[in-house]
Image (tube, rainbow, N blue to C red; front, side):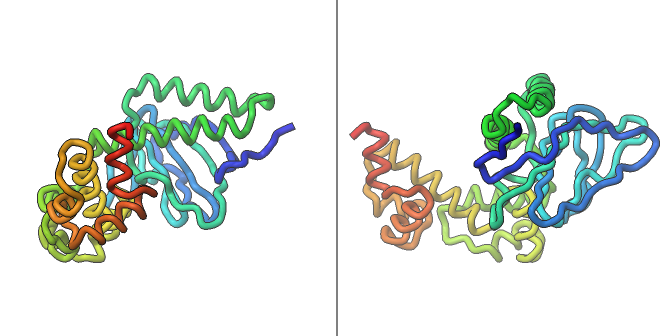
Length: 260
């Protein structure tokens, strides 16, 4: 007897999809309460995004939520094929990673697909274990992809990210980032949600906290010095943001890294 998983996800379908030659895909628009994941293993297709069509190739991991389309165009002579996951999600659940990422090694992606399909067909396999294996494997790959910057983002997104990376320790605002990218603030928000699953302000804070963690663990600077040096308005604001994001104070983080 199949037992439903206790995780926020319930597996509704796990299968390999093979797009036929000479035609376009019969794509889906994801309904409420559902998420769709496509891990491209071969061929070539295109995904519609707020910034136009993005070419997807073997290794691309696509995580679609309500209102988004699955792959909607295919190379007629070299059609794509992919692992297709159909997930029911708990109410209020948000996408756990960027919509578009890249699996680091294509051969390991093929092995993962084979294992996911095989275990899903085996009724003796724990549903909890299977969901955790599938979701966990994809989230690890997505996080590694983000760190390696494997995805080719549009030039406007790249310019915005560069502005944040180079100036996050300054008092940089979202309108300034938008001007650096050559887009409106609303378009910048849409692009960042698409590629990073975060707002521009959240990305600024992310870079500031990363710099702060490096300094907490790698220098003997005071909390106030680190706060002001990383772009926060005060030590109090820094400590509040750090604790909200990590669940611990900057001093507790420093002591934990030192084994105290």
